[in-house]
Length: 369
Image (tube, rainbow, N blue to C red; front, top):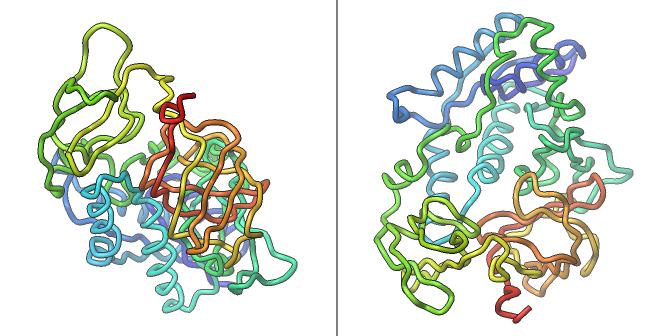
């Protein structure tokens, strides 16, 4: 009997994953990871409540339940980088870092310690055997989850491809409503639990007040595209490209949107109109590229891409630059691609990998289009 250790969050997805693995005949161990040790604004500790839910489900399914802390590792390798990027004026994605550093690294090492054959998670993703091993030893391809509204391959883009050789995604082939139905049918205690939408392992927070505890910010000017001051901000780290709400700007005319940041001058750049050409670019550059096969398909190729989670696939041409970074040229202009976020590439259902967006533009406004 193959032994599997399953990362359990206390949510319905990992609960159903546990049930399905057991039904498939695996020897299943449930492992809860605690990576944050602070209470939220209401004085609650989300991790404690989640672990209680994990224990209930494990008891219902008669599988052993374990808990482990990666609090220091999470702060050192995920949260510290998260803060560093915000302070630099970028908009990072901690969920991607969390998967690379914690769930598919430290957790994988823990699976080995437990003598397990596989690691499993409740991600909406799939793997498929390759006809031959890739350059990095990967024997499987990473495929999108079957539910387009829940596909989570975007968040897996920084994980090394060979890691997936030993990973199972038990619910990746299912639509979310069916996962809920299975949980209800089996009477799992998490069947109606709300999905988490907060920062990986930290939970749902009032983001601005939370970030303000850790990032040193200073007020500055909000200027329009001609350099005229139209307001003030209390820290550019609190704002992201394409943002409309929370700027504190009014007056006659269309709403203002963030179209840029000038870190040297500590200025936030805005313009009026949701479709202003300053919001759109056809080109971007990404670095820290991770190819799931260990190498790109070619030095230049066409594929589709996402610059944010749940975005509809966008056709583009990719060129590999001499330093290994990539230049993406999109068929259609992209609205507010954001430095610090990830560019994730696909060929059909296969996720090729991706990297961190570090430069965008020129905008259609700069090109006078």
